[in-house]
Image (cartoon, rainbow, N blue to C red; front, side):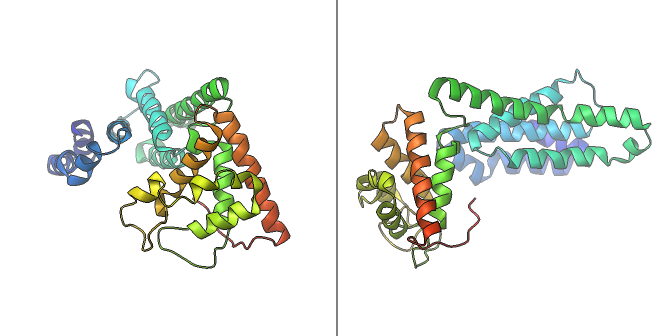
Length: 274
C-alpha cells in the first residue's frame, strides 16, 4: 500500500492524494475483510497492489530501461496474480491499457520512431512475462496431472461443462443463480455421464448448499457458488487425485449436453457465460 501511495503521489504530483490512497487501501474495511477471509485473498491483495504500484512507478520513468527491476517484477507479479485469481485474459487487457498510456505520452511523440518503438518493446516485457508465468503453470499442471490449465476451475473440461450448464433453460429465473437445481436435474436426465454425479449435485445437504449465505431467494440452491458445487460433485465422483480423469468426465458430459440441446431434447437459451 505504501509503494502504491508513493507511486500515485509522484505521478499525480499530489502528496495529499497519495496519502489518501494509502490510508484507503491500508485501512478500508474491504481489504481488511479479505485479509481475514479465504486464504488466497491476502496473496491476491499483495500481488495486485504491488504490481499496480510498479506500473505506476514505470509511468513516472522518463525512459524505460531493460535492466529496470520494476519492469521484470511487475510482469512476474501480474502472472502470479492472474494464476491465483483465474483471470488469464482480463489482466493482459488491463496491461495493454497501461502500454497504451505509455505509448501516448507526449514526450514519446517527440522521440525518433526507432527510439519510440524500442520503448514500446520494453513496455511489453511484463506482458510477455505474464503469459510466460501462465504457460509455465499450465505446462507443469499438464506434466503432473495431465490437464493443461492454470487450476481445476480453469481446466478445459470444466469450462466446457459450465458453459453447457449455462445454456440450459430451466424455465424459471433466480437472481444470482443462472444455473439452478432445476437446471442440474435436467442436465443429469440428459447426460448419462453427469448422472453419475447427481447424488452429490442434487443433494440438499451438500456443503455448498448448506453454507450459502442467503444470496439467493430460494433455499436449496447453490446460487453464485454453483461452479464450486459442480467441481466438488464431479471431483468426488471421479476422485480428487485424478484431475485428468475428472477433466475427461466433464468434457464427455458437456458433449452429451450440447448434443441433447442440438437435437432439441433439452431446452436451451442464448447466453454469454463469464
